[in-house]
Image (cartoon, rainbow, N blue to C red; front, top):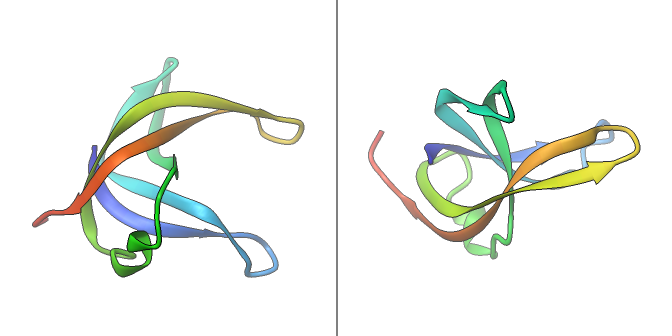
Length: 83
């Protein structure tokens, strides 16, 4: 997947993780999504924040009381690419 690496902020301004804002929306479980949360990033991600990246990984799902089910990409590799 390619897109812009962004830091997800909570209401109080705390970081809750990372996501990729996709170049083009994709269908996940029958729903169109334009961003996917990322799991497994290292500190290297901070250097790539707001940059155009290519991310390779395995799509999985998370479950929670407030958000129910959502897609997460478990990152295997990530690199900066030209947009």
